[in-house]
Image (tube, rainbow, N blue to C red):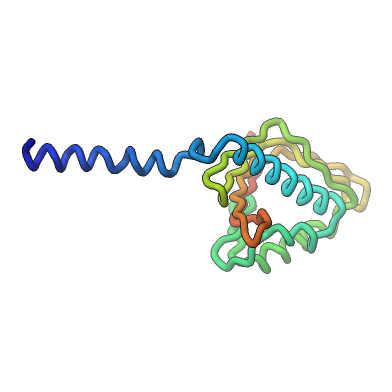
Length: 161
C-alpha cells in the first residue's frame, strides 16, 4: 500500500473515530435515561423557583461563570451576577408566572453534559392585573458539577412572528 493511500485512509479514519467517541448514543441507554430524568427534574425545580419568584433558588442551578452565561432576546449577560440582577429586575413587576411547553428535547452529549431545547409560551400576570403571554424558544446546556446538574449556558428568545 502506498504512503499516500495510507495517509488518506488515516485522514478518513480520524473523523469516524471522533464521531464515534462523541456520539451521545455511546452513553448506555439506562444511564442516558437516568440523566434525562435528572435534567427534567432540575428543569422543573428551576421553573418552580421562577413561578414562586424565588430568584436565588433559581440561580442555585446556574454555574458561577464570567463568560456569557445567559443570552436573553439578543442581550448577553456576561456574568452570573449580571444575569441574576437582570432576572431580579425583570421579575419585580410580576405577580404570577407560568410556562407551557409545546416541544422539549433532551440530548445527552456525554455523562456530564446535556443539551435541553424547548419552545412554548410564557404567561404572566403583572402586579397591576394585566396578563401577558409570549412565545419563547430556549436552549440550555447543563453540566454535572459536584454531583448536581447546573446551567453552563442558556439562551432564551422570543421568536419573530
